[in-house]
Image 1 (cartoon, one colour):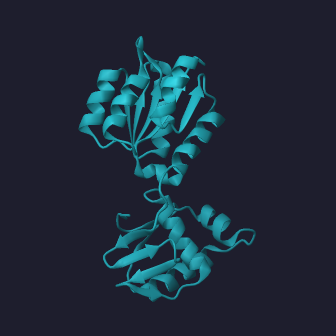
Image 2 (tube, one colour; image 1 turned 45 degrees about the horizontal axis):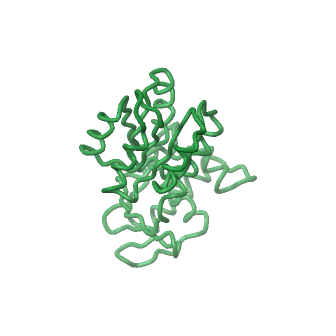
Length: 226
């Protein structure tokens, strides 16, 4: 679900308590969360901001949230949309079918179900091909190559995996614990061993693109673009 951090989410929900707690949780996973309490607010927000995903309650202040989604679909077929409803109503379900919803979940929604919903939304994103790490430095996800001025740099599997993890976790720092878990798996490596790997990686690339955050972890030094 790390790719959700690239997306702006519109969250349409008129239940104040549910919206407050859920917005805080969604804010962990999305780049920005726009909470809207009614359909007019949602329409204005959608017009004024780049919205990549929507989680929409069906019944909003006596109105039908699917009407808002219908308007969205007139101009945007690619926005990832999920619906929440306290009612398992056949009329709502029939109206939702042509709207290309990622999910239709019944409320109250449990934490585990919400996490599953976010995974479904993340799965709708197109696969990444390349990521520009900084000037003249690009990572190709398909060929598993780090390219400097379009020239591939010879790296070990662990070094390539480390770069992928840095990209996927950005802008959140990659923790020492996650490096241990995802790169060395069952083997416990010392801080010195990890620092040595990063030192060799910087030397091979010739560009200081990794930022070490003392006591926190590691992060790409520059914003990435895809």
